[in-house]
Length: 406
Image (tube, rainbow, N blue to C red; front, top):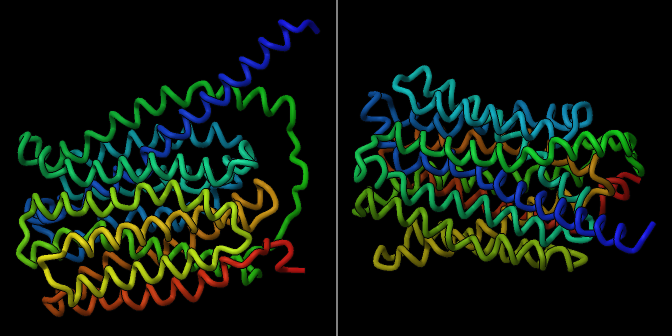
C-alpha cells in the first residue's frame, strides 16, 4: 500500500470520526428540549385544556414512565439491529411524537408525549454505550460534549417557550411543535452513520470482552441506579414546577421561564468539566459530596432564603444539577468493563431510575393541590439530596460491576 493510500485512508477515518461527533451532538440536542419546553407552559396548557395540576404534571411524568418501561429493552434492540440504526429510527419517532403533541386536544397531547418519551429513551440509554465503544480513551471529554449539547438546548427551550407562545402568538402548541425542526435536522446528520453501521456489522459482528454480569444482583449497579434516579427526579421536578414556584413568590411568568433557563445555563460549564475531572479520578466521592451540598443549599434557599437573592439559589441548584447529571452519565462507563455492560447498566439505571423520577412531578402537583403550598414538596427535594449523597458515595468508589460481584 502506497503512502498516498495510507494518507487517504487516514483522512477518511478522521472525517468519519468528526461526522460521528457531529451526529452525537445533534442527537443529544433532542434529548431535553422537547421536555424542558413544557415547564414554563404548564399553566397555559392547564388553563387551555381545563385540567388539574396533577394532570398537568403528567405531561412531564409520561416521558419518564416511557423511559422506565422501555429502557431495559433498548440494549437488546441495539444488539440485534445495531446502535446506529436504533438511534436513527428513534429520532424519526421523536419527530412523530412532537408533531402529535403540538396538535389540539388532550388525547393527542398525551399520546404524542408518550411516543416522544419512548424515542428519547433510546438515545438516553445508547449514547453512553456508544461513547464507551467509539471513544474508550475519551469517555469524559465526549460525555462532556454531548452533555453540553443536551443541556444547552434544554436551557434555550425553557427560555423561549413563553416568548414563542405569547410574544410570537404561536400558542403553546407552536412553542412545543417547533422542536420537530431540530429532530428533522438531526435525522439528516445521522444518515452517514447508517452506512457506517452496515460496514461495522460486516467487518466485526462479534464483540470482544463481552462478559455477562447480572446487574440486578449487583449492589454497585443499584447504587448507580438510585443515584441516577434521584438526580433525575430532582431535575424533572424543577423543570416542571420551578416556574410555578417562582410565580407564587411574586415573579412574573416571563421572568420565571428565564430563571429556569438560567438554572440550566448555570449547569452547562459543569456538564463539560465534571466528566473530564471525574474520568481522571480513581474515586468520584469528593465530587458526590460537592453535588449533595450544592443541591441542599439551593433547595433550602428556595424554601427559606431571601427572595431578593433568588438568582443565587437558582444558580446553585443549576450547578448542583450539572454535577449530578454528569456523574450519573459517567458512572455508566466508569463502573463497567465494556460497551455491552455500559448499555445494560444504562438500561437498568434509566429504567428503575426514571420510574423513581416519574413520581416527582405528579407527586409535587398533587401535594400542592392538597396543601396549597410548595413547602412540603420542596422538603422532598431536601430528602432526595441527602439520599443522593448516600448512594453517590457507594457509586463513586473505584470498582466495576465485574469486580464488585467477585
